Length: 287
Length: 349
Image (cartoon, rainbow over all chains, first blue to last red; front, side):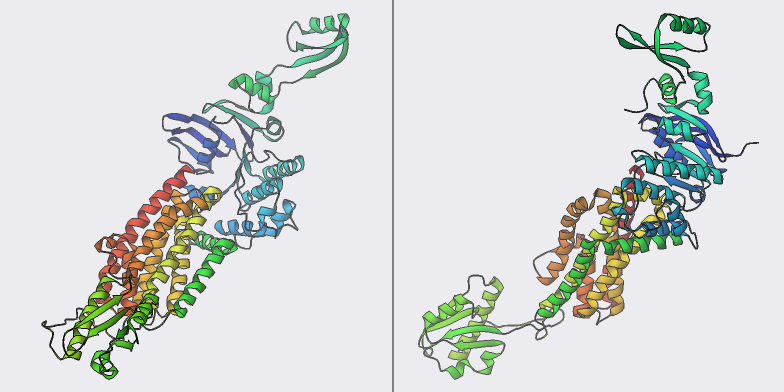
C-alpha cells in the first residue's frame, strides 16, 4: 500500500462568493515530486497556503503526514519546509543568523549552519548580510532555510522564477537531492520545462479545479500529438510542413512529401506540457 | 505557548532594533537629552516677587521693613521714567510709583508688564493695599482670611524640572511605540511574518514575543530616566508598577499603529497625532489649570498623574490605587482591540 505524504480531500476555499479552490482531490506519495501548474488566479497559491497551514479550508481537508493540518497545524509545520516565491529573509541579519534563528524556532539543538551554507555554496558568505546578496543568492538562501529541519515534505513556490541559469540549476540539484533523501516535494511552477524535467507527476489547475494529474509522459501520451516537422524549399523560399504521426494516413503523407518536395530538414516532435496545458485549460501558462 | 520560539523572536527583534540606526539613535538621544534637560533646569523655585518702587516721599527704611519685605524684593528706583523702563525690560514684574504726600492724600501708579497674568495682577493689587497700610497706618477696610486647601506647598514649591518627570517618562514610553510598531509593520510588509508562521510558531506566540519586547524596551528606558532624575526616590514600587502598566499601554498602541500602517512611514503618520494626544496630560501637570476634566479620557492621564503624585507629592497606594486600576482597565481594552486589529491584518497579509 502506498504511503501518501499529502492527501487533499474535497479541498475548497472561497473569497466571499468567489470560489478559489473548488473541491479538489489528489494525493502525493512519499518521496514523490508533484508539480502544481496553473496560471495566475487559478487557485494554485491558495491550495499551497492551505497545504502549509497558512489558511484553513472552507470545506474539505488536507491530510499532511497523516494529520489534518487545520487541526494540528504546529505539529505538521514542525515536519515541513516551505520556500516562498518572494524573498522574505531578514535583510539586516547575516545568512548564518537567519538560519540559526529559524533553527531555534524549530527547536533544533546543535544546528550545523555551516553544513547547510556549504550545501548552497555559501561557505564563505555566511557572515554577509542578506541585503548584500544578489537575487539568485537570496533564493538559494530561501531554499536553505526551508531545509533547516530536514523536512519530510518540501513545499516550493516558484523556486527558480527569474533566476540566472546557474542559480536555477543549483536549486534544481538541491530539489533532486532532497527527493533522493526521501522527502516529498510539492512544487508550484510556471516553468513547464522545469516541471517536465523534475516532476514525477504534474497537476494542472484551472479555475480552482484540477483538469489533469499524471506523469508528464502519460499526459503527453494521452493528450499530445506527435508530429513530423519538415522544412521544404518552395518558390525560392522555405516553408514549414507538419504531418501528424500515429494516423493511418501518415505513411502515405510522408512518402508523398519525400517524393514531391525538396526537403531541407525533417524531424519528429513530441507535444510539450505547455501544449497540453493550453489544450486542457484553453490558455497559455505564461503571459 | 511556544516559549522557545517566543524567546528566539524576542532576541531576533532586539538585534534588529539596535541594527536600525534610526531606532538606536532615537533611543539613546531620548535617554541622554531628557537627563540633560532635567539637570540643566533649576532645582528650586524662586518665590520672591521682584518689584520696583519710586516713592520720593517715603524713607527707604520703611520700604525695607521686614513686614513689607516678606516674600517681596523691593528695589527703590530714582525716577518714574526709569521705573517704567525697568518694567518694560522685565527686570521687575511690576513697578509702583507713589505720587503725593504719604501722610495725606496720595495716589499709586502701578506699571505692569503686558504679559503679566490676571492672578498676578490681583496679587499685586492686594500687596499694594497692604503696603498702603504699612505706610499710612490706616487699616484696609477688608478682613483677609486665608485657607490653604490641600497640602500647603508654601516655601517648597515643586521645581519645574520635577514636574517634568512625568513628561520624560511618558515621552520615553511613547517614543518606544514607534519602534515596536515599526518592527511589527515591517514583519508584515516584508512578509517575514509568513515565514515565521509556517514554523511551529503561532500568531499568538508572535504577538506575545512582540508584546514582551515592546514592554521591556519601553519599561527599561523609562525606569532608567526616572531613576536618574529622582523619580524613584519615593515609593519605587508604585512607580515601577505604574511604568510597567504604561509600557503595556505602549505595546497596545503599537499593535494598533502596526495594524493601521503599511510601513514605517505610515506608522509614523498614524503615531505622531496619537502621541501628541497622549502627551497632553504630562503638559497639563507642568502647567496646572490649563485643562479641565476632559483630560481624564486620555489613558496616559492616569500614568502621568500617578508619577507626579508619587514622585512629587509623596502619594501612597491609598491615593493612587484608582489611577492604577483605571490604567489596567485601559490596558485590557486597548491590548485586546490592538491584537484583534493586528490579527485581521495578519490574516489578509
